[in-house]
Length: 153
Image (tube, rainbow, N blue to C red; front, side, top):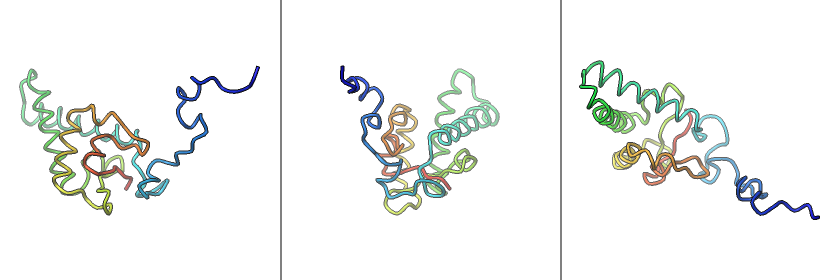
C-alpha cells in the first residue's frame, strides 16, 4: 500500500496541507508580517466589534436614548452604523478598534479610506454576512468591496 494521502486529506485540511505556501496574511498587499501596519487578526477584530456593539446597543441606545426594547436592536444597528461612518470616516478607527490597536486603512497608500469606501464598508458590515466571508489576507468581503484593510497600529 502506498503512502500517498487520500484525496480528501488535501482539500479538507486546506491548501497548506497539500504543500502550497500562501505566505502570511497581507503579504500580497505589501504589508509586514508582524507589528505596526500588519493585518489586524481575527481576535482583535472580533473584540473591537463586540466593544463597539455593546457601546452602541447598551450605552447609547438603551442608556442615553432609552429606546423601547422591542425596537432597540434596529436603533442600535443605526447607531452602530453612524458610529462607524463618523469615526472610521474621520479618524480611521472606532472606540473598539482603538482599544484593540487596529484601524481601517485604504489599500492605495494606507491612509484613511475615502467617505464612499467607508459608507460601502459600513453598509456591508451591517449586513453581517459579507464580513464573515474572508480571503487569505483576512479581509472580509466588505473590506474587499471598499478596497480597505484592517491593520495594527
